[in-house]
Image (cartoon, rainbow, N blue to C red; front, side, top):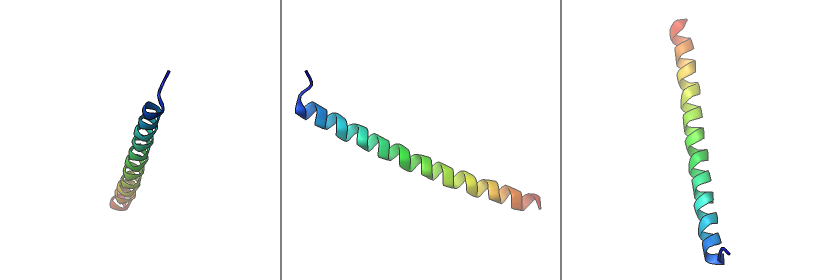
Length: 44
């Protein structure tokens, strides 16, 4: 059976990993839109 301390450590780890992935996703998404707009401007 999993102990309370192990469960707490797992929850903290998974929560931290989720936040890092969310921040990384938003960083990539914002930068990709910026480059797409710049490409459209350069073509005109």
